[in-house]
Length: 423
Ligand SMILES: [Zn+2]
Image: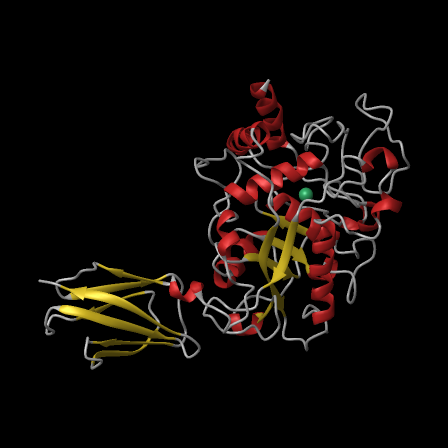
């Protein structure tokens, strides 16, 4: 039974990207591979078999939206207003908690019983990776002119190979969303999760630490402000975050394909307009296609639900994904000054004890880090000044054996760590 499911899911590898009217490409996410389902399905099975050991959780995902703009004033062109970006946060928080106001009017009664509160929230990042307060919570503005990038719009390969690596924030702490002027009429795309044991994905590029996240066309972002027609209710992000949490397209990316969710009816293909209930295909009567699902291609105003099985996939990815599970212990949404385990865990001293040279590795580059070492009497024995390298060393060979305190100060937070010098 499971083998059959895996083979059917593998068909999606060969699906082409559908193009809709006005040269809009609803979604340019690569369908996941058979190996992806091979990784995910046993985890879902285990979850279903013993919900007490693998209970659903209410997740809150620390999110940063990197606004890639062309030097415009805030609120103009691609440099979206705070209100527009905040409206995208609102949409995500409503859709993934089933509090969206259009649920009852958009979802036919026949499908409402399988609709899910996915119990996933999105919080605005309150601190940068360097531990500084965000000028605008959840928003990181980047002027492409100061980055030396070509003029927009940008291809997906330029975004993946140039923009993402230069701008991504630690993906174990932040869910990275890029708001970009994408070329080719593409509204958005996402990376699928990777997890322990998932090392290859034939024909599909696995996400990496410099690529994981979601990309949204700037004028398909949020539901107020500078928006194109039809895709103006923030559902591009809802759909793409669905992929980022492991969901497939509702039609399984094949004619009458399989999206690996038992509670979504088999469906012939994608829908680009608003069908009238019921739309029968693939022997899926009497209720027909679940075109109102966020993972179809219908206009934003015509999609309003995830299902229970989709929730199970997303919850499983949140619990197991390499760049999903660590988000559960991130404090990126905690305001600066409240506490700082992030900074506290940011440095590794090795070897410790040391016989003379103490090496230090930073989890992320600091722009304004001062490093000093004090002996047990509180006397300063080393001062490295400003350090920008992620790895550096301190020479303690002229000092006597004993305990030393290494002080890290980024201008915002002071953190000390204990080093032991023993020859
Ligand atoms: Zn999609």
